[in-house]
Image (tube, rainbow, N blue to C red; front, side, top):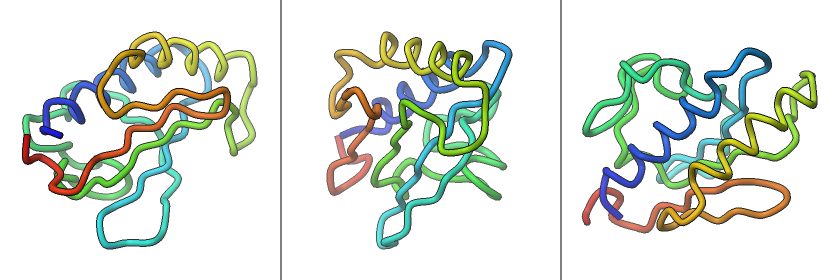
Length: 121
């Protein structure tokens, strides 16, 4: 998978999350790390670069696309939030990512699984 696919998925996150209300929650799994970190969706398209996200990225620093193994957005927020607003944003994300390579859409989540090699097209 190339960086462009990850970049397009992140842009879809920003667009889906742009409506007012509770932010989408993103489970971020990094290469070489067994943990999944619960983060907010990026909120500005200006931080999206060709090779990664500028600070704050996901969490507290810049993130290169090659570091990402998986991004997953649950259909129901694991954090207290207004359900209707969150659901609307999730539905927008589903429509924006439907048909993207390596994206799995289920009733429970929208997940981008990055193949080994990260941004080696």
